[in-house]
Length: 252
Image 1 (cartoon, rainbow, N blue to C red):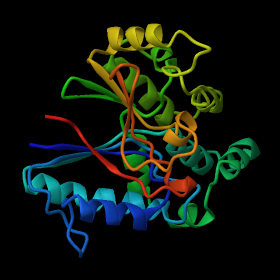
Image 2: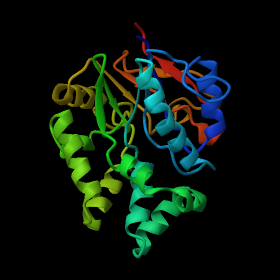
Image 3: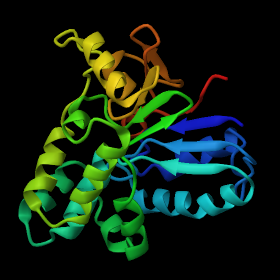
Image 4: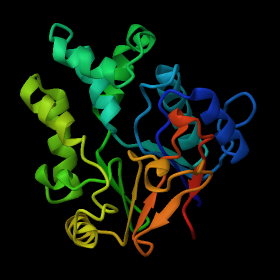
């Protein structure tokens, strides 16, 4: 079994399809041929690109195909899913609409979304443990404010997204403004890594959220960025910044 990870897509459906075909996970008709492979998406399907709903539709359609073949497709919740869900749920509250639009919200996505897709998005986990790695969308430590285990944190996120308290939604979105908790010279990065892994488990953090271009200036990333002595892996290839993206295969 091989495990593959896709970072932030941000509506760039064509780039995603090309990557999945190149990796041998789907065929030219966009059906699963990855057999028993496991494929993880790190969130941020929406905004800043034209086909967010197309990305969600593809993932949801491929999930049962992969399962039938003995494989699996899973996804994490990103902050742009929360922005989208908040704008959909609180349509009468201007701040949620403006926040979503300022962050690249696409009106076509909102017009095309179905109740089934909304339910799928609301039930995405915030964290996952995969082959002794901790998968989290954001390179941030605020997750610990919502729970000190993967299960507890995922349940806390779920309760907010199933609820109607705009203050809780607003707080969660504000927390997601954090980034670079594991790479900034202004913070105790090694201490943050140790704390997060100490509570959630695992020997390595894999995340998106922060484009690799933000960490290494002047490059167009075509592979994951492994840093902090191998303790962290950034898989956000910056598709919306013009990068081609990539699919990261977990080392055996």
